Length: 260
Image (tube, rainbow, N blue to C red; front, side, top):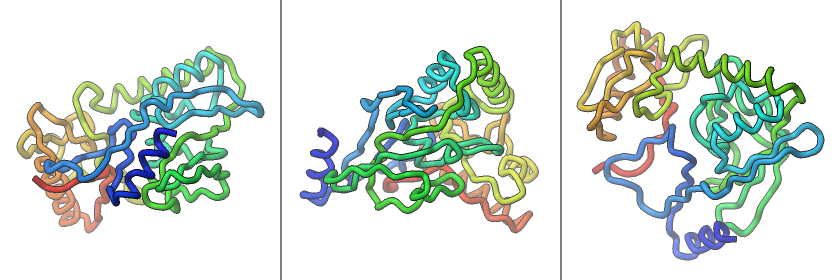
């Protein structure tokens, strides 16, 4: 009710609203955002449903999903272990790994209209997932929850696969420094990290922003990076890779707001 009231108020007064998950793959320009930022942290419902399904509200964190499934022996979402963010963010970005994406486990999504006046339950057939995005919803729509298909397994088996995924991430990604997640989408048939490293950009720095020396497709904040530093580094990388390979790197990170 509170969310519907807020969206209705925004519409009445023509105030733009921006839905934010946990902010892991979002970069806000240095001038900030105009309007209202909607964060769904209070939507934390998580429960098993009949028919080998799991209902998770948009504000549920990635670690909550992992712990819940591990404790109950629910298999199918282990590939998401360690993908930072919330369920809402997973859906909006069609989060995943090279071998799998969240769309493969979605049965239904609950969506509130941009005005807050209506809630729809959309089956998988009505959802248009693409690489790192969910298309087809009206701008300003709010993802409230999802039903995921899971498979009954054992806690030990699920924990083993979760541990394998987490170990792989720990060995290949800069988990101990602040980043905005994967910077670029992987182009067809290649990997953005490989292209960036081949272009000599691993460790390249502008201001306080630096392409990670662990994985080149992550930009680390070395302590005092501004959004302008990060954007300048992104633009430099796009130009450098394109000049060497003719490949256009498309940002995966979502950039919002206005310049300072």
